[in-house]
Length: 68
Figure 1: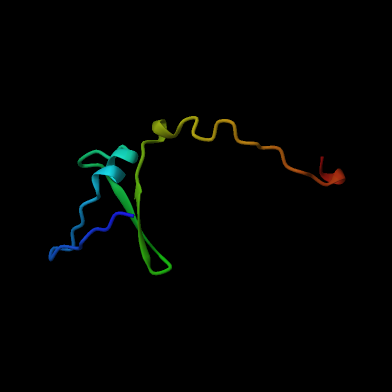
Figure 2 (figure 1 turned 90 degrees about the horizontal axis):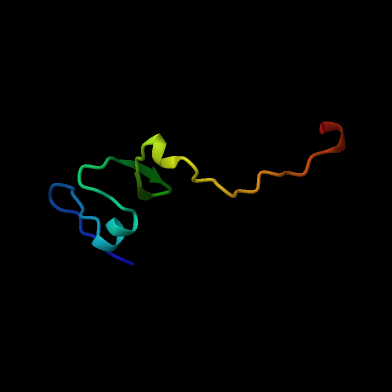
């Protein structure tokens, strides 16, 4: 697991393998979330990039007989 160091200006460098894996580009926006004592960086994506991301998902659910 890659480790990063927080600079005196509170900056971090995202390791190259992670940047390449997530296809991050210079200037791209990231959402910063604090959750249970940890920091999460989530890349912001254009809505057009998300088209089809749930393709093949099983949307069938069990329903009660009186709800069909």
